[in-house]
Amino acid sequence: MPPLLPGKIDTLFTHCHLAAMADASLSVIKEAALAVTGKTISWVGSQKDLPDDITPRCREIIDCNNRWILPGFVDCHTHLVWGGSRSNEFEMRLAGATYQEISQVGGGIFATVNATRNASSDALFTLAAKRVDTLLKQGITTLEIKSGYGLTLETELKLLAVIRRLEETFPLHIAATFLGAHALPPEFTGNPDGYIDLVTRTMLPAVKAQGIATAVDVFCEHLAFSLDQTRRVFETAKHLGLNIKLHAEQLSDSNGAELAAQFNALSCDHLEYLSLSGARAMARHHVTAVLLPGAFYFLKETQKPPVATFRNLKIPMAVSTDLNPGSSPVHSMTLILNMACLLFDLTCEEALLGATINGARALGLDHSKGSLEAGKDADLVVWDIESPSDLCYLAGLTPIEQVMIRGKDIATAKGCCF
Ligand SMILES: [Zn+2]
Image (cartoon, rainbow, N blue to C red; front, side, top):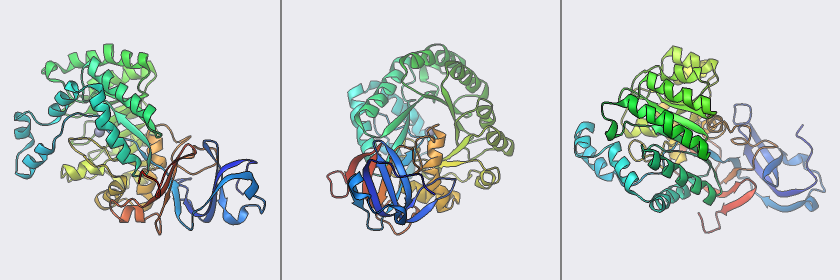
């Protein structure tokens, strides 16, 4: 039996179908109703269980006319604050240029680092705000954004301040992650340990003091930082009480996932080259696997993450856009859902769980986000679809009727925003 209906209801959605994403399944309730009181979901159940005298208790009743309601998407891995453009590199790649040739003419990640360092906070905010607005219109109601294109104390703090301003400006919840150890900046060529000294002794304490990030991430890979350097960042992060995430085993097996698991990381992300022992460590420490099919697609990779192992070991799988200028300039969650199914062999149910409750888990927010359950934040999207699998099948289409975040109606199909 659903919990008792509260005395006061701000919004009652009726005649809807729900994919509630509770209990690690779609948790479909056909012919359903959902009540919102204040910022939270106060009741979820069957339409037939609504009492006859419900109307006077509701400030607003929305007849959904058999449309579907799902939790708002949680995009748990993005790098969407950056300056400059890399479209010229895309054309070079299409013409046959290698990564090395692109780097030699000033391209690659350092093109973005230079442009980001040289951009003002206002300019970065304006660029990033357009991207956040686009994601919001894709039904994303919770978003993670990483720093990592500054790579100096001043510019990393500048990026995190832009992320905070985005959080203050937009209705969706934005989680900020410090990714100072994203790439070795040119000033530290040949001295990666010196840069890690800067990250651990100066940057991390400043980030903690300003309270502008809740998690710390590292790119552990042969072309970025070693296992020992990653461990040093994690030890400091742990000491400062920050959550831990890791870009792990994207291009090779560096045993990063095993290390991250030892530090009780929230998530390990990418994981194409994850070993069985790494997966077992993740399972033991309840680490979420974040799958990023956009980067796999854009880089034309061939090694898939071990999805069958994740299933066997019951490791939750999240999926995310990985929105960034270098390897995943993908601004669409529904396109990512389609890629997760076709490129990584996820079922539609797994992909949708990945973009909702498991995305929330990867951010440590599953107590309040990612599913339609009484007591959780009223973050939801009303979709004009025949079934939830349409969101995976109709690649890139976003037939949104309404978005609600924390009980507030953000936009409707009839409004200006969609
Ligand atoms: Zn990333």
